[in-house]
Each structure stands twice: as structure tokens, then as C-alpha cells.
Length: 107
Image (cartoon, rainbow, N blue to C red; front, side, top):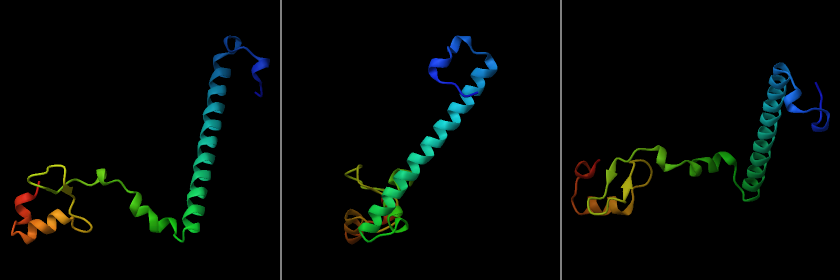
């Protein structure tokens, strides 16, 4: 079933033809989305290489902190948080230096 818009009117098509058209459209949409993703990935790879990096070196920096639960919260400034992974924030180091136990500021 190869038709152009000029060759048919949707109300004139059978249910089977409409379902086939939908499957064809879904398949074509999927192909175009995958092609666009591949193009974007290649652009990222080339940009990373031009800057002297590999994608695998950069991916950890792209991960969202929103996926990691907060474990510690500043007692006076609730917007300052730390998940307990990676380098300690300055405010955590200052709290430790001031003798505050991490258990006391754990969420």
C-alpha cells in the first residue's frame, strides 16, 4: 500500500488500511527518531574528541544529582545538601572542623 496524500482521502479508507497506515507511520517515526539520536550522539562524540575527551570520561558529569537521595542537610541553610558521595562540600568540612558529628546533620 504505497499512497500519497493526493491519491486517497482518509474517510474513504478501510479500517485495515488505516491500521496499516498507522503501523507504517509508527515505524517511520521510530526510524527518524533513532536517526536523530544517532546524529546527536555522533555530534557529541566528535565534540568530545575535539576537546581531548572520550564520551565515557564525560558521562559521569552528565548524571543528575536528583537521582541520588540527600543524606546530609545544613542545619541553618536547608538548601545546602550532600548525598554522601564524591568530594565533601565545604560546609560539611567546616561542620566537622567545628566538632559537629555527621550523624547530627544526617537526614
